[in-house]
Length: 180
Image (cartoon, rainbow, N blue to C red; front, side, top):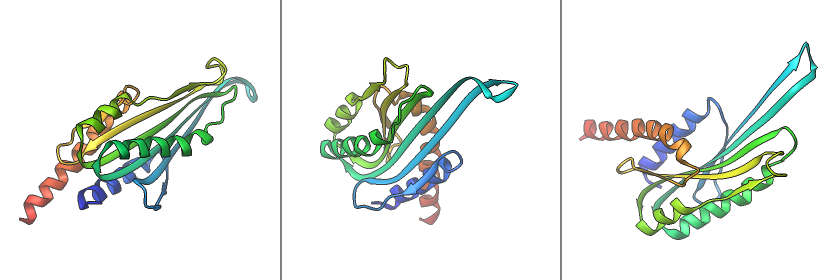
């Protein structure tokens, strides 16, 4: 993993740590960290036992880093996120949604891999969505240019990720210029 990848990974973990529980993963795969977010909203009348409604939202964000993104790496990340994330989904009457999100940092990529990444999708509805749904989102960040490639579901995170990684990449390049 390049120095830039490590720096971006550390800064993303620090940014996400305000809202997510972060667990570092060192198993020799592209997966570097798991960030878990849980939220429960509810409305009640007078006392908490008289609950009108409740909704639980979960997100498991997987931070991955590879030097070169190829189709094999895209498949490996997709399979790993689904294998780890699907058992974490516990649908019930108050479950609204669970997002399984993969954010992949790379230095170079094959065009076929990025095309495949754009087409990835996995959505599962539980009891006609009465018990919520699960959706897979993926974003790949080119650390050399700052370009972000996402699948259809990942469009929701693209803007925030662009802001986060853009500041990291520009700070890194400014630091490189100062040392030269």
